[in-house]
Image (cartoon, rainbow, N blue to C red; front, side):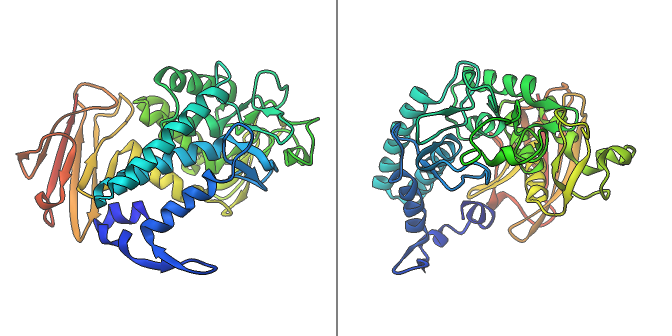
Length: 367
């Protein structure tokens, strides 16, 4: 919903009344509040959202009182976005509620979820902590490292350390492993990844769906070189001259790739069946190229490899075709030094909608 409103600029969409699936109705804004409340009302012993039958990961069954750190980070981001929407709608009380809930959740995250060099994975109903240096299998979990950054839950020092740990412990030439080391002896009733061979799918495999989250996290850190390295590691076209390694159709995203814990390292499996393509497009256009729609206009915030001299692109935005040119004379990754629209300077890095017409040219210089 926020993505739709950012693309269209239609704030009134949040005031549209829609029915619930079971009974009753509410505004779209009200539906957003209820979705947040669902998770805030269902928590475990540490006050983090319960894991139920799965979070994103279908292979972990945490139960009603087991806690998902991944969901905690998603709820944290949701509260922040909701507060921003409330402010735009003039709903001051709603913004205050969301900020207060966010602050409480932050306290719980900092109290429980940081393991010294990375963020933990989850907490079982019996109190078992997964994704910790004290648990021999699945010690580092990709999702919680990147979502700690994406959600804003990580402190600057934690963000730097968590992403460095992820690179050191999970990075491979073919993408970032979902976790490591593999699960062998964990309780299969909770950690169903044990049903897979080591090094594939949720059991220390390279899950394609999650790769773009790593790209986005590195862009948020301003590291365009690492962001693009992660992107190149999993895009199909990078394997056109190595088809014997990848073993599936060219130009097609797959669900999973074997990691170094398997003799088939680098071989991809389950093509087409994945949400990877949409996330890959989003990571490339909104974060590496850095052209993001907002209610007020287009934000131009690239995070590119330092060696890139720049790039050009076209963007259809609210009925207008806009040309964008980014120049990088100083060989940097991120940071807008100047911005013009049709030759006229624009302060900051958001181009207001009213300054755009069909055929407008935006020129951004990094520095």
